[in-house]
Length: 321
Image (cartoon, rainbow, N blue to C red; front, side, top):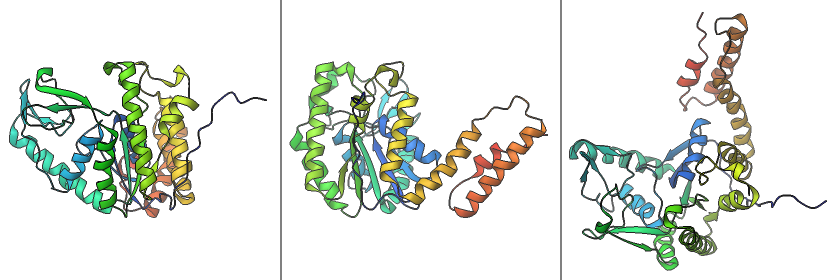
């Protein structure tokens, strides 16, 4: 019988991720989905210190900012709030001092996580960049400033390879998991989006070929080819649906985590699912037994992994008589 689906192979890495490993995730909103799942399942993950970033140059700059090799761009005032051209629009403040303090706190927390990190997950969204004419900076976000203040262009393959080769070489003891976001940037135009993704693919192929600690994660192919159906898209027809994220999460865990971590994640997944349960009779004996059962599971996990925060899970299973 002929295959009704194109199967995508995810190459294994050695060693695989363990439950004690520290991970850092940076890049597009697609990377955020995996980071949220890892955080939800109590993995050691530090994600998006300066918010969601899309292009390779801004992501690379954020790593240099973390290590204080660069200074943050001067804050800009837009619609009564101050923003940073080095950060996503979700990061803003009513005063310059508050914004700068926030950025410094984020930098410090990210530095500690990066220093301990064994694995770094990076997802590139686009090779299209916006350069601020006044400062010459390739910005992380335009923050709705007038388009006349920017020059837009496509990064070259050579530019991306040069920038990221330096980073991957500098942190050669870390394992880099590199991917291209399948989310289409349709505002750029479909053809322009295809060109941009092609540049990213070729750049990552060269990086992984030249650096033994860099590995390509075929999440793009998984979504575009194996899940080749609009039922796996969200309502905007660009982002992945919850079902698609679930399927990618399962493949990620199966491929990149070791056996012990997979068993631990399965245990925690039972708790995560139970926390979403909405009882019809919240004061019944049946619900009391349910809460006691999962509270005991959480306490067992807490004993095994006391370095993780289980407070929200324990609170979720407090029976209200």
